[in-house]
Image 1 (tube, rainbow, N blue to C red):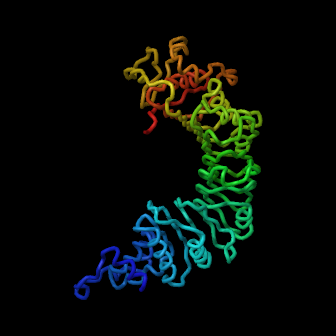
Image 2 (image 1 turned 180 degrees about the horizontal axis):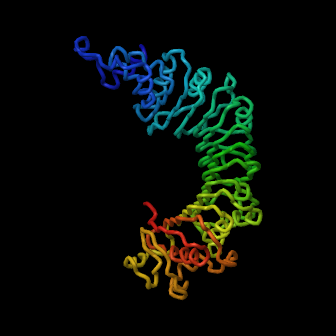
Image 3 (image 1 turned 45 degrees about the horizontal axis):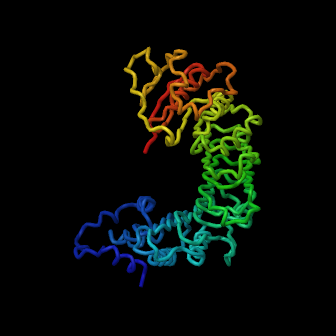
Length: 451
């Protein structure tokens, strides 16, 4: 039974009895347009186009971009069979990209080594420049190691993997056997690696790695040496001491920390000092109460240089430590910064509603510089908003700040956005600290954290 015969009965699509008499306008479309339409279809939808007209009967078999989504099938078994036949029946033409989305939301079975082996081999043999095994949430971690064929490609530029074992052998193969690889994304993978090294990678994303049960204790450090890297994104990597060796070309860096990001507060980390050339920097953590993250990051400050190119800065709640010392430290050393984004975590200690907003145009109010959900300018008055008015907030932010020496200039800073949980009084203190330390005062927007 052909692939078309397997797919069509399940979709309920049948041929028209009036096909012979109906005008066939679609057949008049040029080949280039038909191939363009295929780019926006999943593999299953592409096969179904064979029912549109005679012209479309075999167009799917020459598609160069294949995206197969298991969520469109009744079971993982039927999905595996479809992908097997899809690759078997397609014409022997070069393949640009193969994307496998393997989340099926059913418990019948999941992908394993033997399933993905022929799919990856087909992609590499077809000169694919993009390959992704994504959204895989099965019980077994997948692996590229041990295949009866070399994981080698002089065409592969983009590789996205989910729920894989990433070890030293894998990293070496990428460096030596994929000479043009530029984009690597690893989600929910077990990173059994101490050194990531590449001279070709330009974009690296590692997101939510598997816990330590998947690798031995010796993997305490994660070193990244990529001199040509442009974008770096590390998200919730547990119990690893991250060291950036050469990332001098990175322009956009994003780090999401959580309570397990470092082994302990004594870890020596050079994340911030190594990123002195970035234009966009995001350092987000869930709470100011997590001492480990803030202590590790602050300890690296003495090694920081001026962030001469930094335009956009986003900070999570760790910036609140020591009277917003991290925030003021980074602002003072970012002479070209234009936008600042501050993110407060869900309120843990105070459920009272925020004070009512002042009337527009008001210049004398205990919070006269605050206009919720809008832009405000300061008419700050000494003593009108003492810390003792907000005892809960004062316990979260020590008003004594080591960075306060004298007001400093942020001439290019035009916009500050603060996202806060409803009822969080700390936002008042943050604004006051900004008012007291930076000049000229930029427009400040205060918005409730999206639910």
